[in-house]
Length: 219
Image (cartoon, rainbow, N blue to C red; front, side, top):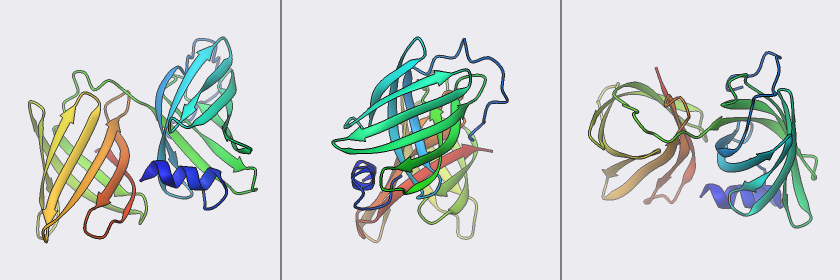
């Protein structure tokens, strides 16, 4: 799904793939080490980004196959994702709490766009009970859903006519929902942000074999 999308994008065969932006201030205490969920706001897809910070230098991987190198200077972050001879350069601003970034990217094919990224949380102590806005990034359609949590079990009820019920599970920072329709399985899988208020991931319909980026935001 998303790994294939990003691979094709960075290779230039297809299109590549703030959340709170910083307002200046010193980035001296910011450390970007960890796993991030990156959303291509232009092409409406998502990818996971792992960063390791040593001083102001950044290294890591994107989608476990692209090498990333970069620099953090105050709240300005720049990093490049490389695969073979192909590369995509990202430039963004990090929020003062160090948990989100937003900016732009340009590929060596001159394709460009906007991105946001959220630091992935552990999921510890998160209760997802409440109202969430579920967004299909591919079609830019959204749906409000009330979620109740009982242990690791989630139950979502869409706010519409007719209401649709979906079963879900939270396992650490991973959140998944699944629904059988017409004998086919549709599922959504994503990861909680550091503040526990956003899930970023992807969806897939086993009947149509369609897939795309997906997010949920607590309302």
